[in-house]
Length: 172
Image (tube, rainbow, N blue to C red; front, side, top):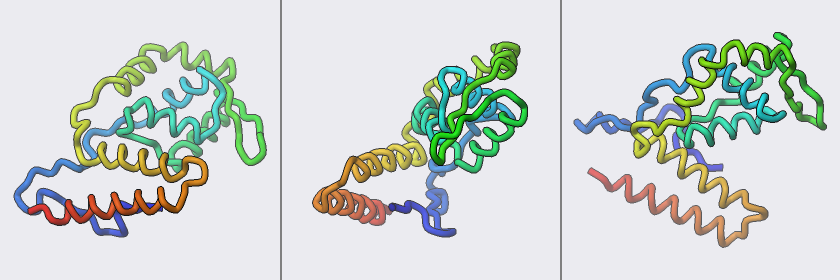
């Protein structure tokens, strides 16, 4: 596993008079709007929690991925509200929309569509540090988890990451 930030140690570009380009930026979702996105994704087809996380990340262009700590309690809330049902498959739950959940989505269609449009819109700062780190992480994870990666592939990935870290450390 690769860690870009360890503990409380973070690099802030603005410490040396440079603009800070790696901050969080605007929030992807306002309070409560995540539930509409999750419900819409489940309405499109039944999904597991992990699939929901990955789909949101993909639709946000890699610039945002909700944590399991945000998604799984939300799924429990949607179950409690009767907006989704869940079928157990091994140690996973497959969530499906209920008629009540579909009616809720239909009643809030304009709001749901606005949130989805905001997610799909090209975001300012696609070249910011945070977005690029997400992109790098996705590529590294895909290449390392692709089947049984060879020792040579793992060594090559580690060498590339070390070179990149060394080059960045050399910057003024």
